[in-house]
Length: 154
Image 1: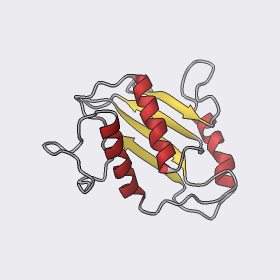
Image 2: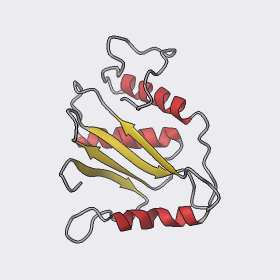
Image 3: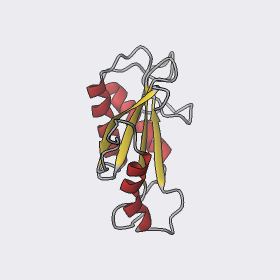
């Protein structure tokens, strides 16, 4: 954020992430998560992080990126969670980082079995729905195409 390589694109169920000078307020972001984290101190691996990487050939507006990120979170089962979406411009293409929690407001751990596989299925579906280029170069996506990377492509 300080190098002007990222910006907050979207946030949900969080305090305003900017201070009065327009800078990202990490303390406010953490405070938004604390009630959830304090409700369940037994769970490890409480933070959910996803990186969505559209093809450089796909020129998406901020509004389209917001819509895709929101739909992705909803379909992943994190749609009611607090989350923040950053748009990064630190490589040759813009991409998104989403940070949320795997613990709900009542302290219950959200199910995340097969999360990576589920994420890839959702991303393939979003590519088709929004007419985006397939993330695996030289291949058309099919329902049975296995993911070839641990990084989530979009």
